[in-house]
Length: 286
Image (cartoon, rainbow, N blue to C red; front, side):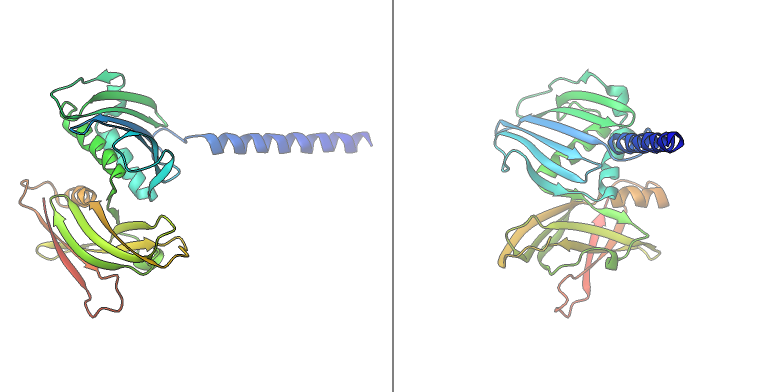
């Protein structure tokens, strides 16, 4: 009766409030500085006269080729990369350390010809900030951060550094290494796998903490998620991983040494389980 109707109205009101709260939480970016950012980078110029925009959706864990006008090898809307939360947080942190919000609205201008020009929009829980300028006029920390976002367009991903993870927690679909080399701050690989119909997800993961030898060592593996690719063509591709997250973690643990004088040995597991080789020793000097 009337009491029953009042109870039903109360229940409906409570349900509506719960749905409203859920929608609010779902659309929120979270507390200030609480997670990965959303970053849009418009790149123009360079020797070839490129013009394209990439978008890193940090919370969503994807990098999208948003717009291709000139000299880019993706179609509008293509997913270029997938990111783990650690990778997205690391890239976000580079901009926060560079003081991105204190630089909001700054146009650093041009220095010279044939340089890339960037327009970057950075959005996180603290707000939205925009900076502009050519590649050589940004302050050093900002230039590094922008360069790593730009590198996502050509397939360079930061290494995941997670001392608490283990290989059995990551996809390990079949993968063969054809070539590997540390060049500067990058690990360059030529890999092959069976597929051809899906975007395969490759990540380099350093795990297990530092091994106190001389030089210090760290274990690593390549995670490969084929995304249940139904095709069986043999795909060979070049991939690159930025090793600077390891450099940062090492320096936090051991302090900053003389540039170019620190050696870290990366023990990279061989993903080809049919091989008799247990792995590779890679020397990273920074």
